[in-house]
Image 1: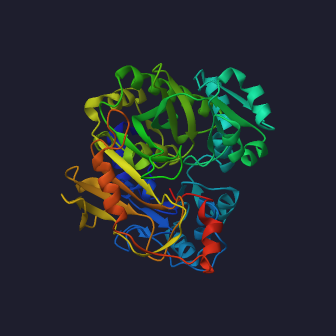
Image 2: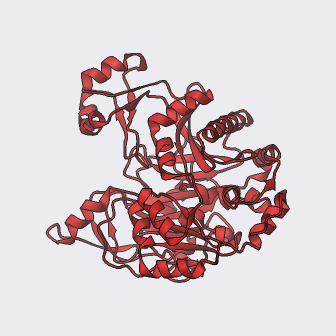
Image 3: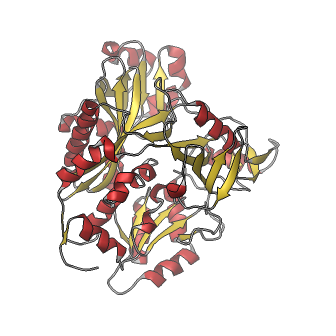
Amino acid sequence: MSQKTLRGLSDIRNHFIRNDRPVIFVSATCFNLLGMDEWVRRFRFINHLDCFDGEHANVLAPLEVPHAPFTSIEDINNYLLQHKDVVDFIRSRTDGDKRPLALFLMFDEQTEALCEELGLEIAFPSAKLRNEIDDKIMTTRIADRAGIDSVPNVLTPVKDYADLRRLSAHLGEKLVIQTAYGDSGHTTFFVANEAEFDEHADEITAAPEVKVMKHIRCRGAAQEACVTRHGTIVGPLMTELVGFSELTPYKGGWCGNEVLPDSFTTDVRDEARAMTVAFGEELKKMGYRGYFELDFLRDMDTDKLYLGEVNPRITGASAMTNLASFAHADAPLFLFHLLEYSGIDYELDVEEINERWANPDNIDSWGQLVIKHTTDDIEQVIEGPRSGIWRLLPDGTAEFVRVQTHRRTVESEMEAFFLRITRPGDYFYKGADLGILITPNRLMNDDFELEVRAKRWTKAIRDQFITRTLNTQEPIISAVIAEANHFKML
């Protein structure tokens, strides 16, 4: 890469268009960084699942070879980094001192060791630091240091229900309890009585410390950002879809986002941006740099904004941020993350970018639905929908229009980009990711209920899957159940 100082967005865009250092995103799917290969020359996806059936020019999905059962995305990545086809591919891309940059959704110490063996440089803070920040208990303490309010809470071990009530008397009868780690509502528990506590008692009492919060009537919001040497760059504030039974089996489970110019007042957007910048600067003190996302909880009774949690990485909302209109006008947020790890000097007016990206006139309207299998039954997929552009028909069915690698050519809210996750031969189980659908305009109404159109899209896509119900005596059942709730693909 060139060693000259990049001055402003034009230089930064030009630098990545001419990039000669391989950049590789290793993950279960290509979802989180969709479209980044169009901005960065020599960008490639190495994935366990080929969502495009060989029709994406920059995706390498090697044939599956025998492996231990996966229990996490880290397991998938470590499997990929030891796969002969992947090793050969990486070595073919290594050129002298230009070590390829490696990107991950999730990784651990084994991943770091494998990357060192392969001559890859990981373009993220260490797994140890990310894991520390990802702890919901630590997140609360970081927020306290940054002067950011969390929902009234107590951080404490809990021995039993009586102990919970003694420790949380000041928080009211209805409580929300979170353990340190967990995704999409897996470890968020709503407790108003002893029966509800007993349902999750083993997980709660086994934790060294839990976060016990006052139950509030709230709506979720999310904001992605990037800690850079010049300050924290902040993306748009997004609404969150949470707990819709049509999309997820988890009561507090994330199941989509909307990016809309009028979802929030100017005051709420400004407050969220200030909180995100403050949190980013606190992360910088900890040695963190690069991409992260904050979840906010907006109290519907007081309109107060609270910090929910942090994801110190790219997330399921990253495609929404990085494919937005302001990103095409300036640069995707993730480009600034890459810049931090490129070894290049650059100059940038972060305040100017934040002001421009906060302007509702620069935000277009999009929403995404993350569609999961919502019941306990286990089925094998015989046929499934292709990734690409789909059209919703007047009778509520959907038809495939054309192959496309992201939403760029979607023209109306009766069209959508669908990324298939579950393939023919795979299994439906509770919480399995079927796919992601991205379409223009709103997916929720003013009362934060799913729009009729969103429900129609969800049903139309589900109907594209042809499955067979498995006999509970079939040997495969135990293997599927063993992996079912350990991890999510996204």
